[in-house]
Structures are given as structure tokens and as C-alpha cells.
Image 1 (spheres, rainbow, N blue to C red):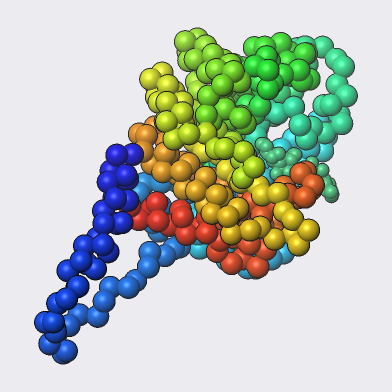
Image 2: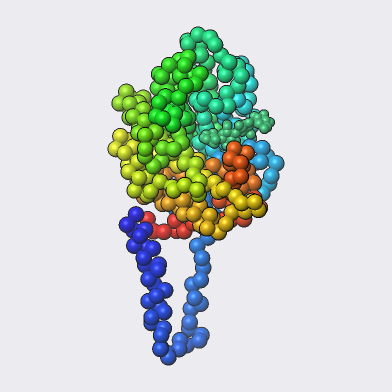
Length: 371
Ligand code: G3I
């Protein structure tokens, strides 16, 4: 962080020094020997810059858009070295019935990732949302649901390791198990199996692929506070019990309406996980903007958005236990925000026409800075 500040100060000071040198000077450089001024601006693609920093730089992918929009596919492959299926690996699309696994949609993404040298973060094995009716309405025995969950996790994790070896390197094993008030969230899993479903889920995933990095993933936990503390308690309890967990995903759905967590809070929060041997990842970053009647973000809003994106990336690069930074989609043409938050949008790095936004340039700048 200090280096970044020094870097910023130097960047600001150099032009001032040059202006100072120039004042009143009469000497002229010999025309033919003068080097052309170095005016090259830092630019993308992001994935090459990320590779130089040892960073996994990913985004959530809508498989429908990937299949139907060649520009979506081109920009995705050009800019990112990792993907997360936005929906295709969730229970509802993947498990139409107890006896059926619908692997076609997620397979098309994993195959795309393989062709384009991208890793995949599996998302998500246990969640309270997007469950098929046959699970949502389950009212049977604890042992049966336990067997169904165990079978699901082992089958899915094992399938990807066998069909696409080493491609799905990380899994969001358990998603959003803590409520905003810090208590365990009620769900079919919690109510039927009990709180131990979380430890069991990690154990089953680890059995199926001992090499995969296994994460707990949640929102509103990046910058501290009571929910963040509750997640830390849960996760440190798992570590103490010897449960195979490798990290915690900070989803990070932000809005320009609210302050982002401070750099210091983010660093402290990330480092508390480092102290118990865990990695952290920024798994779902987006920064939604309240739009006016013209549906266009203002320059100020775009600058605030760029600032939030760059601070999160900068912090991830600063701590040694974060090397995985992902946005929840990359083009405003495909984002969950407008249908969920009426009047909000423009949350991502590219606009609806795939033009780069200030947030994109801000990430380029961060990636260009010296380590
Ligand atoms: O599956 C149906 C499909 O059959 C139907 O044709 C279509 C028509 O509307 O709806 C489809 O389901 C929708 C699904 O997205 C796929 O488009 C669901 O109604 C809709 O609720 C679902 O929203 C997703 C949401 O999770 C809930 O699963 C969003 O796209 C997705 O961005 C969002 O992602 C979550 C992360 O997984 C976890 N963290 C929070 C994040 C944002 O909510």
C-alpha cells in the first residue's frame, strides 16, 4: 500500500519537475536525435497483465450469452484467465430430478475455458436459492437428504475432475449460510440435516477432488462488521475441527450509493484469514449505479465505480493470501442488477456495447503498478 502511495506521489511529481526544468530554458535538442516522447498509455487486455502479477482474473459467465453472442465470447477470452458459471452449476439447472444431472450447459463453459486456457471456479454446491422443486419441497428423513447432498457433491466434483482434469481448480462449496444478523440461515439443509451440513459438504468435496481449493462464499463480509465476524467464527471453527477448507470468498456486490469498505478494513479482514492459514478471493465484484431517467451513469458515478474496483484489486494484490479476483459479469449487456434492483445498472467493466469503462482503465492502472 505504501508503495502504491509513493508511486502515486511520484507520478504526480514528475510532470511538475519537468515543467519546472522547462521554464526559461533555451537549449534545443538536435532534431534527428530526439527520441519520440513516450506517450504510450497503459492498456489491456487485462489477462496478460494479470498473468504478470500471478493473478487469477475471472468473471461470471452467462452460458446463454456465451453460446449466442460471439462478441461476448471474444471479449471474455481476450480479457480473463478464469471463469465462474453464473448459474449453470446451481442445483436448479443441474438437477432437474433426483436421478438426472444436466451437465450440457456447464460443460459448454468448461470446454470453452479449456480451449482458451482459463481455469474454472465451480459455483455452487450448497446454497439455499435456485433449488429445484423436488429439493425445495423435500419433507423426508435427515439421512435421505444427507445422502442426496453427499451424492450431488461427490458426483459433480468427481465428474469435472474426470472429464476435464485440473480445469475446475476451485469450488464455492457452501454459499451464503449466514444471515445478515450473523445467525445461521434457515434452509432445507440447515433445517433437515442440521448445522453439520457445512462440514460434511467440505468433506465430501475434498473426497471427490483432494486437489481442488474449497471455499466458503458470502456477501457483505469484505469490510468487517457483525456478519463478517459471524462468518469468521464459522470458518475458524471449521479450521479448528480439521475440516478441509482452503479459503473464503468475499462476493463484494457494491453500490456507488454507499461507501466501499476502507482499504484498511479490507486488509485487516483478509489478513485475519491468513492468520488461520486460509486464502481469500474477491469472487463476485460488481458496483451498481442508480441511474437517472436517461438510464446513463454520470461521469462522477463512473469515477466512483472505478475507484471501488481499483481499491479492491489493489488490496487483493497487496495481501499475500489473495490471488483470485473476479467480477460478477463483465458487460452491462448481461448483468443480474437491472432485474433485481429496479433503476440500477451499469455495474460492470464494459458497457452494453462492449466499450471499456473507466473501471476497466482503473484495473489496468493497478495491474501496471510495480509490485
Ligand atoms: O432457470 C430459469 C429459466 O428456466 C427461465 O427460462 C428464466 C426466465 O426468466 O429464468 C431462469 O432462472 C433465472 C436464473 O437467474 C437464470 O437466468 C432465475 O429466475 C433468476 O433468479 C436467476 O438469478 C440469478 C441469481 O443468482 C439467483 O440464482 C442471477 O442470474 C445470478 O447472477 C445470481 O448470482 C448470485 C450468486 O450465485 C451468489 N451471490 C449473489 C449473486 C447475485 O444474486
